[in-house]
Image 1 (cartoon, rainbow, N blue to C red):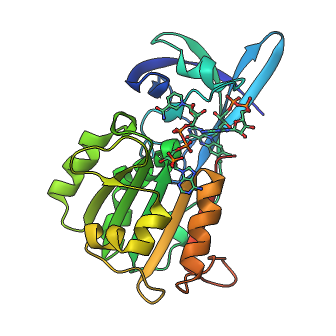
Image 2 (tube, rainbow, N blue to C red):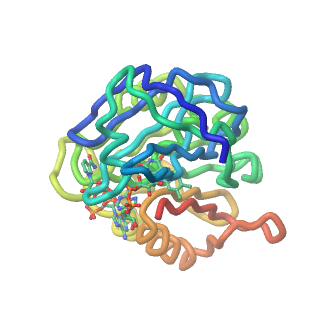
Length: 244
Ligand SMILES: Cc1cc2nc3c(=O)[nH]c(=O)nc-3n(C[C@H](O)[C@H](O)[C@H](O)COP(=O)(O)OP(=O)(O)OC[C@H]3O[C@@H](n4cnc5c(N)ncnc54)[C@H](O)[C@@H]3O)c2cc1C
Ligand SMILES: NC(=O)c1ccc[n+]([C@@H]2O[C@H](COP(=O)([O-])OP(=O)(O)OC[C@H]3O[C@@H](n4cnc5c(N)ncnc54)[C@H](OP(=O)(O)O)[C@@H]3O)[C@@H](O)[C@H]2O)c1
């Protein structure tokens, strides 16, 4: 990988260890949904990991990341301050692409934690909302303080009739926010009711990003309702990106 040095231009801390970093660099052109590799040289070893680009194409690279307890790289990245250097491979990778979603549909973007990142890029680029009947973003976090970019997403929902933002908390209750894991809220009907849409194979496409246990559990719940994995050669209704 051809890493190049760049610096943190801006850092927003949403909760301790949960940050958005904007870099002072525009990387190679990417499609919303793609990721890049970031690295630091730690104890004489280059430690690199994948991070989804949260920025719209053509704008400075932005990453939404969390300090994973006991992790090698993420606690160091999350602690970087404006002006601090890091390494970025400018080449984007990945096939978690909204351009693969058959249009027009009702598109459900389901994220746990920092799995929100690629959806920020998709929503900021604008095309996804233009091309589909509706776009619903469901963001599941442990507590309301972990709802990074909430004001931006609420603002988008208030200006775009086709976009709905459905935050979910799973541990500490929060006023006006649904409580419970996504699959539980799917089973109860609470998620569809809050979104004002019904999930069904003939009208919906679902993207899932983040915790692999969520991908498995929600994937199973969707399969029971007839929504199956989407592949280029055999079109379906569910596209996934596992973070680990
Ligand atoms: C395609 C792709 C895109 C990604 N994009 C992002 C992103 O935009 N933002 C982001 O924060 N992370 C993202 N990740 C995860 C990231 O690459 C690292 O795995 C994460 O930052 C942990 O790295 P670490 O070196 O601190 O932990 P490690 O020392 O590598 O190990 C920690 C262990 O924790 C687990 N783990 C990894 N990520 C998490 C997590 N978020 N929560 C709980 N456990 C975890 C894994 O089992 C891993 O083996 C992405 C991963 C992939 C594959
Ligand atoms: N989030 C933060 O602000 C923060 C800050 C500092 C450090 N950390 C560290 O970062 C790591 C990741 O924490 P995280 O909270 O961002 O991510 P996470 O543990 O993946 O949790 C994010 C959301 O995913 C849900 N989820 C987990 N498994 C699921 C499943 N099988 N099906 C459906 N939903 C599921 C969680 O619900 P449940 O609550 O029910 O599990 C939660 O709502 C941890 O090591 C944590 O200690 C997090």
